[in-house]
Length: 431
Image (tube, one colour):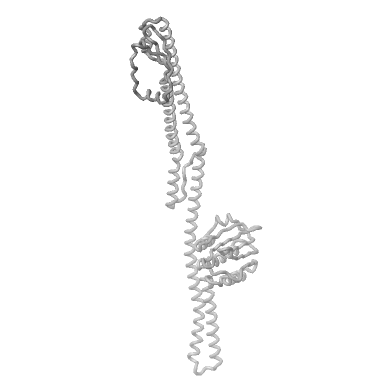
């Protein structure tokens, strides 16, 4: 059951209960009105019979009936003859004033019947009708007040009870905010809250996996940093050490035999020094390009990417790498240029290691205010498997893209395989 039907059930049930009470109240009021009407009719009949029995003479029974009242819509009174009739006093109170206001000066009809030396006066009595209307109005207003208050109370109680699970959801969100491990919420009867709880549990699982992946990425970055340092130290020791030793030997030979050596020997030693220096310069350029490729911040971005692709073509000649690069690109911010280069490098690495692909298509273009890179292969990779087993490579590409203000994502390539998308914003001056 969802929240709407539960609230509807609460309100409808209480409304039906109030309706039953209102019907009972109306029934009691109707019974009271009927009893009063019957009493008034009986009293009127007794008064008429007493009038006939009196036959113009004073009758104590008639006086008692007239003094007892209990008539509705009609007022009876006995007056003395006109010669002896005094001025009738004006009645005070709210009801007579209300009668005068409602009558608006209209004449109240009356009939006079002579009873010997007395006169029986029969007048239409508006006070009885006004009294009934006011009494019924008060009953209706009281019913509406009770109904309104009751509906407000039941709505508040229903909402309070129905929204009680919100506190548990709030506690679950607080636990997620404290970076706790996967949270488990109690089952909820309402469909809306059950759906929210399920989404929160999935969110906690995804956050836990993301935190674990980032921790693994941090460890891999530290390991990669140490590996690069070891490789750099080995390169410096093996390559540069040997080259510097050869240069030192050639220079020492020239120094010792400069006065008596033949020009050919000196020239040969100089050539050795030049060759070793040239080889060292090449090694330095190679190491620098591995640590940080040149030209990523300027207009040489396309040249750097072409050099990277050329290197991969030499390393994987069995894989056909097709490129669709423009001749130039606008200058990219440093973070965007590095993200573009590393994403292409990591994508080609994944193709070589995992995809079993025979062809890779690379596309780079400017779309509006962004530069977009697409790497599409015809391998056996599936997006769901790659995302589930994502390690440092994919996470690193996403992190670099986010740091540069862009985004990186995967989807299925047409005909099978994976397609990597990278979108990076241009600088404001180039947009």
